[in-house]
Length: 196
Image (cartoon, rainbow, N blue to C red; front, side):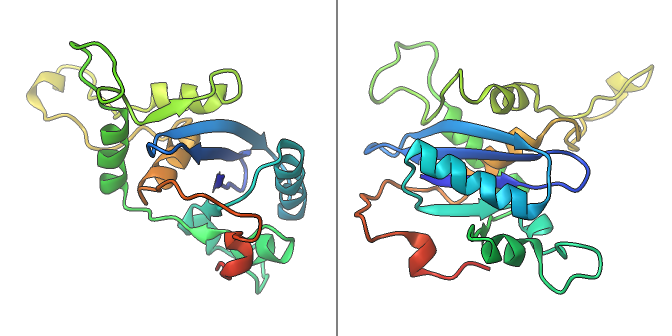
């Protein structure tokens, strides 16, 4: 299982948990939208992972926020504070353009042909358990020019910064092109490597 965190100061944190099958298809299984302090967030993460029986392979975080101080004047970063509370995270690759290309690749399939084991997307969502992430993916869009000049300008390259958090977690998850790996009881990444 891989957990992805898009943390925020004023908005709720957005988390997803995803797993890979033997064909390297990615299934986004669960989401958490949580507003609270980092120690409470770490408790909630551990609680969900225990209740769901998730065997954690890795946790990744938005690197821009992960490196920030955990509190005003604090010497620990957000990542260090989460690790201190038992939920270590690794920095995600934040190459936005590359991430967009990879997400498109995971979602691509030839809709003019029947869906088969070969002709299908590589990214799936547990519809009932990740509604906000799905909505964020569906609403992810670029800004548009308005008014009389809209036909005279090239399309905007800027993403509209509204409810992109679920889509951002998907980008952080897929940009590293995760692959299936059978986990044994003692092969926990959090124990094997020290994040941050």
